[in-house]
Image 1 (cartoon, helix red, strand yellow):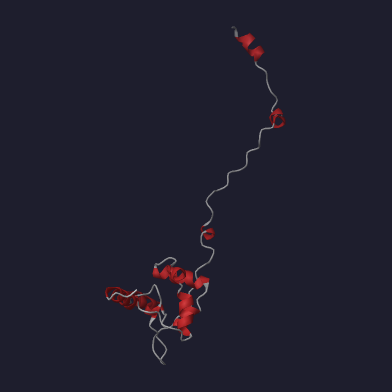
Image 2: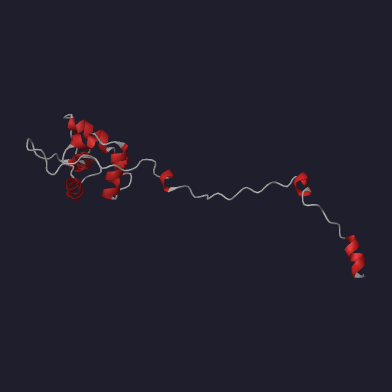
Amino acid sequence: MPVDEQQKRIVKVPADTTKSVGKPEIEPAVDPTPPEEAFDPVAPKKPRTMKAPRKAGGADDLKQLKGVGGPKLEEKLNNLGFWHFDQIAKWTEAEVAWVDDNLSFKGRIERDGWIEQAKTLAEGGAKRPSRKRSRRATCTKRWLGGA
């Protein structure tokens, strides 16, 4: 086929007809990754701390809080400036986030209910029973033929 015949077959379409055909307009690309604040809605805020325990009565036994357990975590809390149950009982959500970040135990405070326990203990509530005694009592009871 000669070139002249081929050129006759080509139909030129005006540029403005593409809109009338119904092609969707292309939206500008949006970054799908949300900002980091979307993952952490509460900005950590340092709670009020103390350099040492109060003179009257000394430091509270923070190991009574479920989840603190041993002396190492209690020592970390003391080093951060937390010596008393009433300090922990007053933590806000932002302060819990700060303590979580500094203890490297994400979610442990909420998961173990430290604030509620601390409120109870600060008001003079019952101490948490030792799990070792409870297990020992249960095993002894079973061994002796009790329920």
